[in-house]
Amino acid sequence: MGKVDYSANPNQRTPCVLVLDASSSMNARPPGGGKKAIDALNEGLRTLNEQLREDDTALTRIQLAIVSVGGPNDDAEIMMGMTDATNFKPFELQSDGTTPLGKGIQIALDLLEETKSDLRSAGISYTRPWMIIISDGQPTDNTDTWRQSTAECWQAEADKKVTIYPIGVDGADFDKLAEISSETPPMDLNRIKFNELFVWLSNSLGVYSRSRPGDSVQLPSTDPWRNVRV
Image (cartoon, rainbow, N blue to C red; front, side, top):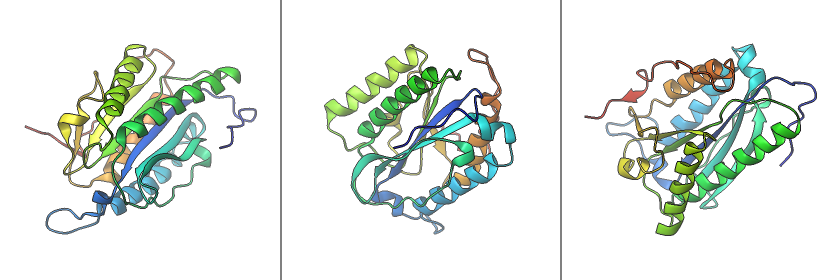
């Protein structure tokens, strides 16, 4: 996994890692028909790329990484290391296997710490990183791995190291997702509105990337994609 070359772009960065469920359940179609969740997710990643390319400032300041959970290898693994948005090229995730979400979260946290170390070494300032976790099921890790991963999330949040957004697709175990973050309750993706979700993510990261470390930021509304649970 290559390192980002910061020599040509010394701008402040906003790192964001996407932890994406690619388990076999993502092959399901929503009730009443429509796209499979994995197809909608892949389309959403293409939308994210298109939206970022409409924002020249965000393009030079946002960094993205992707951790896949499940998939053909039935494991949690880095599918794309931390990459400047200008070099981001969406690719197709293939769904299969189980949901080792806890392991994926731990990989993502380690990746963010490595990224921050690289940024500091290069003399590049950065805002607090984001972690977006999207799942349609429940973790299949053993209990110890899951508890350790959620404890690491809570500690990272307490230390102001990361902002975590757990997002559940239809069928997700929201009680489990609620264990991930002490600060942000899990949000319910309305059916499979991945396009709307990734438009929101691009716009939100664009706003956030223009802030200074420590600033309070008003993000766009989640209403276009969020299902309000009652």
